[in-house]
Each structure stands twice: as C-alpha cells, then as structure tokens.
Amino acid sequence: MIALLRRDLMLAIRAGGGFGLGLAFFLILCVLVPFGVGPAPATLAKIAPGILWVGALLACLLSLDRIFQLDAEDGTLDLLATSPLPLEGIASVKALAHWLTTGLPLTLAAAPLGLLLNLPPQATPWLVAGLALGTPALSVIGTFGAALTVGLKRGGLLISLLVLPLYMPTLLFGAEAARRGAEGLDATTPLLLMAGITAAAIALMPFASAAALRMNLR
Amino acid sequence: MSIWKYANPTQFMRTTRWLLPWLSALAIMSVGTGLIWGFFFTPDDFRQGSTVKIIYLHVPSALMAINAWLMMLVASLIWLIRRHHVSALLARAAAPVGLVMTLIALITGGIWGEPMWGTYWAWDPRLTSFLILFLFYLGYIALWQAVETQDTAADLTSVLCLVGSVFALLSRYAVNFWNQGLHQGTSVPVATGGRTVADVFFIPLAISMAGFALMFVVLVLLRTRTEIRARRLQALLARERAAS
Image 1 (cartoon, one colour):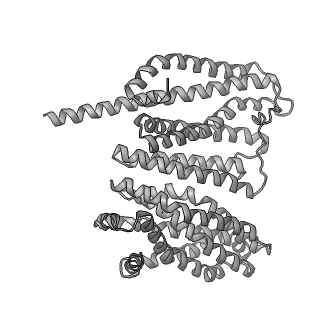
Image 2 (tube, rainbow over the protein chains, first blue to last red):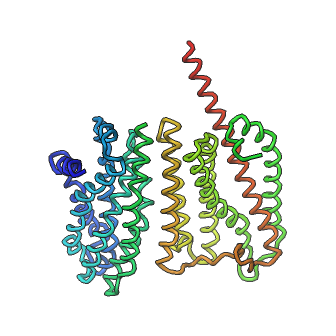
Image 3 (cartoon, each protein chain N blue to C red):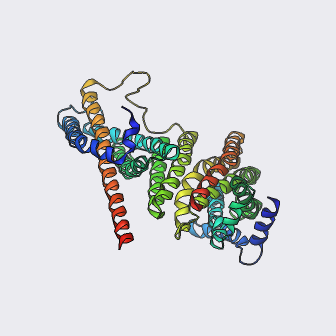
C-alpha cells in the first residue's frame, strides 16, 4: 500500500503529472472573479467564502479522471487488481494520493487566496478547517466517479455530471461554515455535520469504488 | 405465483402483452378524468383563484418523480443481487420517465409560484432537492448511454443509483439547513391522515394521482418491452453474423 502511494505521489509530482494544475486553476479562478463582479471590497467579502469553496471543488474535479485513466490505459490497473492488495485498499490509496496532491495544497492555498478576495479575517480559520475536513470527502467521492467512468472514452465530461451532485452536501455545509465564520458567528454545527459526511464517505465509498472497478475490469 | 417468474423475459412479455392495453385504458381514463374534473369542474380557490388548479399536474408528477427513483433503486438492487435482466431494463426504462416527471413538477411549480410567491424560483429546500434529483436523473441516463457493454452498464448504473440515493437523501435534509423555505407543507399527509384540502379539490386530485401512477407503470412497461425487443434483435443479428 505504501509503495503504491509513493508511486502515485511520484507520478503526480514529476513532469506531466498535472500536480500544479489544480492549484493554478484555483488561483486563476480567484483572479477572474473580481474581474467578473467588480473590485468593490464589500461585494467580494460577501461572496468570497462561496467562491473559494466552489473554486476548490472545481479544481478538485479537474484532476479526477487521472486517478485511474492512465493506469487503465497502460495495464497497470489489471496488475493491481490481480495483486494481493484488495481493490478496496487500492481505491483508498488512490483517493489518499489524490487528496495529498490536490486537496491538501488547495487547503493551504485557500488562506492567501482569501486575502485576494477580501475574505474577512475571522472567516479564514473556519474556511481552512472546513476545507481540511471537506476535501478528503471530495477525493473519495471523486475516486468513485473515476472508477465508474474508467473504461469510457469520453469519461472526463461524464465524470463532472456524475460527481458534482454528490458533492452538494459537502459544499453546502463547507460554504455555510465559512459564511457563518465571516459574520463572526460560531460555525461548529455545519463543520461537524460536514465532518460526519466525510467520515462516512471515507468509510463507505472505497467499497463502492472497488465494486465499480471490478465491474469495469470484468 | 411469485414475482420472480417475470424475471423470465418471455413470461414478462406474455403477461404484459395482455396487461398493457387494459392498464393504458385505465391510465388514460383516470388521468383524463382527474385533469378535466380538476381543471373545469372545481371551484376557484378563495385566495389563489384559478391558479390552484395546477395542483392536479404538480402534485401527481412530483409524487411520481420521487417514486420513480425509488422504483429504480429497488430494480437496481434486484439486478445486483439476483441478476435478472428484466429488472435492469425496468430501471433503465423508468429513468427518462422520472426525469420528465421531475421537469413537469419543476415547471408547473414555477408557473404557479410566479403569481403566488412573486418568483419562479427560490432556493427553497424542496425546490432545491428537486433540482438535485433532476441532476441525478441526468447523470444516471448519461451513464447508461456512455457504457457500451450492456451488462457493465447495468452494473455501473445500479451502483450509481445506490450511492446516488444516499446522497440525494443527504442533500434533501442538508438543504433544510438554509431556512424553513417558501414551499408549503404537504396538504395530504399520508402518515397522520389529517388533510387540509376540501373534498371538492381532493377527489379529482386523488384520481389524478392514481392516473399518474398508472401512466408511469404503462410507460415503463412499454419502454421495457421495447428494450427487450431491441435486445432480441441484437441477439438475432449476432447469431446471423456468427453463422455467416
């Protein structure tokens, strides 16, 4: 498992792995928004929590189809499926590698980008905590979407249609926590609810991903 | 007499062949009666005027939009557990019907909401969860069409249906978090039995609801028969190709 994780991380970080792509997309999105809605600080402060969450979600989506696609094309996935490690474990490791290369950097980048969007300072801890708790769910759910579409030629487009509705509860609670933080309220409740969703997703989604992989490899 | 005997496509085709005309006639009659009675022979509401009459379209279609997904969930489970092809085809046939029902519910709701609430759309829990249901239907149908191998498609969509059900339910209760919403509570609570609709409005509504349910069954059976015929045609073509 650790060897697989190390291999995936290595592939993602080396050239052509698309490691920085999600981050760059997140940055560009946060730069584009003020062009779209105007640079008034009050407007920006109001929409910043939502924009940061939607941006993180879309940046996460960008790299989903790479989770299994390359491995399926060169036959690595077949080898992994016949290895002693169960497919559930492979799906978990893949999700963890995806989170380490996208979710974690996005979480770290959110605070400085929040400055760019004039996010109220009291909201920043809630936003970062929310992203840290929420992005693992995005990765495991995304791995399920990638497992569903692994054999398809037009998988990249379909994956967004399949995965985005599944992201809605996480997005709702995450953005709600950041918004409450911006208003100076206590945001523990939405944060806890979101953490619950994440915990359940981490526990259950690898089984669904493995089932989908088995169906696709049969 | 067990439901499993309809897992045999031949048995399914034989039974539905004589069942379908009767069911269709019944569905046309009850939808017609419910809608015509509702539209032309009920009094206008004291405050809502004639806009109240959209209830005869809105409530039955919303009812079927949810139940269609529930039926797909059951059919998917049967496919995953017992691998009866008819079951997978039933789930596939129900999805577009459910999609259209969701769309009807959303559009009629908007048309009614504009004069009554002053807006076509509000991010109200019920409205939002219906929009999310609509997206789930879209994803489900798109996955069916994208996968080329039929059995793999049935497998994958079944898993998507199971996972989607959990998340659809989660979204339904997550959006309650925003606010209590604009949409009124149900007028016909099944659990408590306490109705808030007068009989003059309720009887045509009940007929219309039964009619929509029948219409759903008819459409799904019809579409499933078409799917079975398409499968048979493919099998024939494959056999001819193998022979030549």
